Structures are given as C-alpha cells and as structure tokens.
Length: 111
Image 1 (cartoon, rainbow, N blue to C red):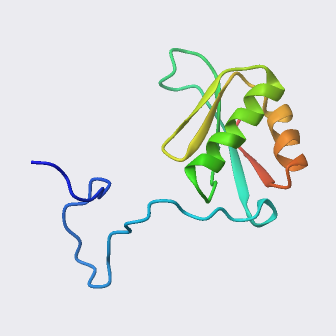
Image 2 (tube, helix red, strand yellow; image 1 turned 90 degrees about the horizontal axis):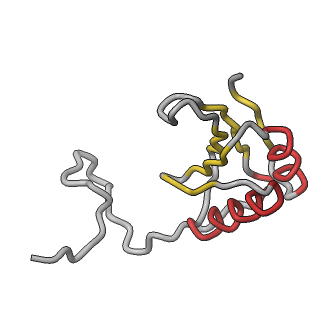
C-alpha cells in the first residue's frame, strides 16, 4: 500500500475549504519582505548553544542555500530542520550582519 499524495501527516480536516497542495514548493518572498527571528537556544542540545533562525517564508531549497551561505561565511556547522536554520555556537552578531547584508530584516529574540 503506497501513498498517492504527500499529506504531511494530515489525516482529516474540519475546514470545508481545505485542500492538499500537490505542489509542495512555496515561492520565496523577497528578502526585504521577510522578518527573520534569531533565537538563542541551549535546551535539548547537550549543554551546547545554538542559534535558530525562524520565520523564513519560501522554498526549502532557498532556505538551504541561505543556511549554506551562513555556514560558509561563519565557518561553523549547521542544518535546516522544520523550516528553521540551526547554527552551532553563539555567533548572533555575525549571523545578523550576514542576513542584513542579504537584505533580510532581523530581530534578536532571547538571551
């Protein structure tokens, strides 16, 4: 029994206008139209600090490209999970500068 559609875990919806999108790619907003939140997180990471960039609206490939840019300019590790960029270490000033040079609006949250 194979799945005929990718439904992202949805089984049932009470919304009459709800429909499953066959095309999963979402067009990315222009950088100047986005507000990215830069969070500092320590919990659940074995005592290590990580920066989580939240609020990106767009295609997963564009998000991965942005993550790759940050990682290469900062010389750190990181990944993309659940629509968020996770960067190792507390380098918020560098990440903020990189995102602002790319045209994104940023906001520091926490810590």
